[in-house]
Length: 286
Image (cartoon, rainbow, N blue to C red; front, side, top):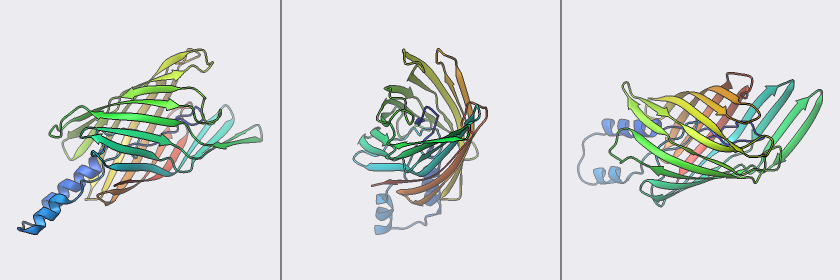
């Protein structure tokens, strides 16, 4: 899912489940045969964390029932250069809090506690700072645990808690349908269609924003997973369609089954898309 700051697609980067699945599979293959208490201890070990970080793709997995999970940027920087103006947006943490409601369902709340937007144009610099918008999502997994392909439905709403210039002071929402598909060679392919209902730029109504992406990931050893992604957004504003495209890369490192680090970067492929975005993040479950 993409969260927006100052009407720029400042993505809170999301991920597939390849790191978790690869770590679990490798651990099972390498563990020696044993009897007695050892198998029971292994069976009780927590499943590897599954997150919607670090890329823009969502994962189809949900947080286990009764568990709490936190996924956040430590810092997230975005630059957009357009019509002679340069805008730098920085999120100082950007946590998403998740709670498992059931076997296949979780609820998620996201807000950036502090964001800054620096714009320099014609030798003049302006600066805005404040809290970001509030996002609430519900993730419902549509496939069984035994299914190789995993699919979820994610409706969400954005409450305009940010000041004008950091947000647009409009209620907005949408729905995403991520699908995670294992393919030969140990790769995981993720498709992420999404449709949003956004406020018109002139404030007179609402219009559709169509998002699609393709993401591919692969484990490197037991703890590292690498990601590559192509993302695009077609904003059908009546004032003029805005088309954005980006190429994204990321890496995750699984410190423990319930603690993951990530780093990533996104690169705009046209003038409308932010030139670059870089971030470092952390996720944990308890």
